[in-house]
Amino acid sequence: MSPEPNPSQEPSAPLFAAVYDPATALIERTLLRPHREYLVANLDGTVLDLGAGTGAMFPYFESVATASTEFHAIEPDPHMRRQAAEQANTQATPIHIESSPAEALPYDEDTFDVVITSMVFCTIPDIESAMSEITRVLKPGGELRFFEHVIDDGWRARLQSTLAPLWKRLAGGCHLTRQTGTRLVADQSFDVVEIERLNLGITPIRPFVRGRLRKRSVSSTR
Image (cartoon, rainbow, N blue to C red; front, side, top):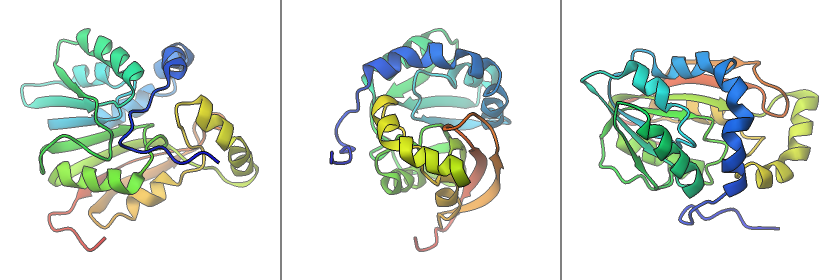
């Protein structure tokens, strides 16, 4: 059995990066649009796109940019990051992109007002470390906004579990069976603002959870 990826090692999935935008173009224009708009609604302050991929969120950042917003992004995969940089160059609003993984963010404590994750927790090797880093870089009262696919119920969950090893190899390290929503709302550093489960998508990428968490001014014991 292959070991889990080391977060310190740069991920690289050139084929997945090459096909990602063409494969998702239709659902980006239709199915995903309202959920990406949800992530940027009433956005203000300094924002981090955690795992920018090919830059799908960047046009939405542009649509809400004001004099008081500042945008940053990380993307550790060099092939995805190159496409994200190309996407950023088409936007009028600057977006500062770093190569760091979610488990080792290159920012000071209390830097961001909002951290956004969009279909990224499925690929992060060490979720616990990533959540610690998100907590560290968010200001007290800052928000974690998320839109993530999770494991389903019944026969769909069994199918996801069967497909998971092959899917992970083909889809850039994507895990089909994570319970991301449950993990996020259980974090004692955050209060739940809202969360909802959406019977959205097609098996094996179904269902999704989306929501907002607010960092507590004084964190409870984890």
